[in-house]
Amino acid sequence: MTHSNPTTFALTLTASPFTSDQHARALRFGQAVVAAGHRLQQVFFYQDAVMAAQTAASCHADWARLAEQAGCPLYVCVSAAERRGVVETAAPWEIVGLGDWLNGLQVQRHLHFGD
Image (cartoon, helix red, strand yellow):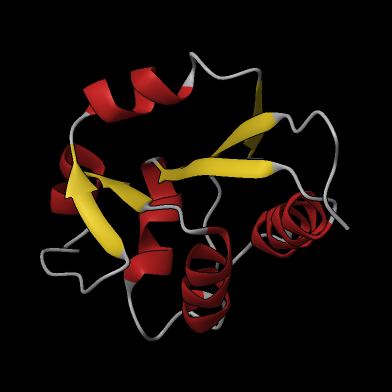
């Protein structure tokens, strides 16, 4: 179903995918956004959420599927990633600076998922 007046969303996650249900909640929200015909502009992973970019995270493949479906990037904060040993990623994951997160705040709706 395509929405006649789609809203653009951006998501920010700060919670660890290993100790929180926030990733599952954010994924369900992102899937609902896309299913309703809205646009998901980006997902930004900050603080402990950057651990989702590692293939060991159970939600890693789910985020990649959502990014492909939505046509949006999965941004990983470079400083948070370096502090946690996340040094390499593969598409659709991109290591970026906070400026990319700031761009995501300019959308119609921005939601934060964290502890």
